Length: 132
Image 1 (cartoon, rainbow, N blue to C red):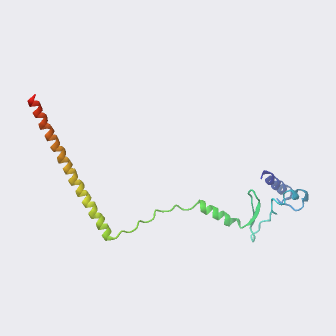
Image 2 (cartoon, rainbow, N blue to C red):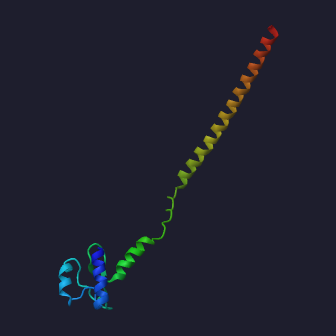
Image 3 (cartoon, rainbow, N blue to C red):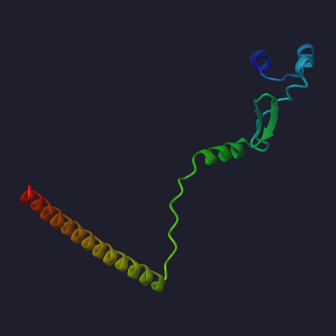
């Protein structure tokens, strides 16, 4: 790659053409590696794609726009949630209310059990203290 780039730039500096036809002795060395660099004009819009293999292509703006559009895509938004029917909503609301009621009842029952346990514990403790 370095040798080809050096050769192309040297030929451009010497002859004004990166791949001149007039230099037959050097052109034979790399003719198979690099295509003839065609001049750019408004009709054909030729350009050299410089990669491991140098290739001529047309219309660089199409390539540029393809890559720039892919790298600058707008962020996607979160999709709208599915709409829920009125019956489904009412069922969920009822289930939530039932859960809240059950939680309250269970909490109250637990509190009563704890209070009852404390009362029984304190009475047994008093009886043991009076016996001793």
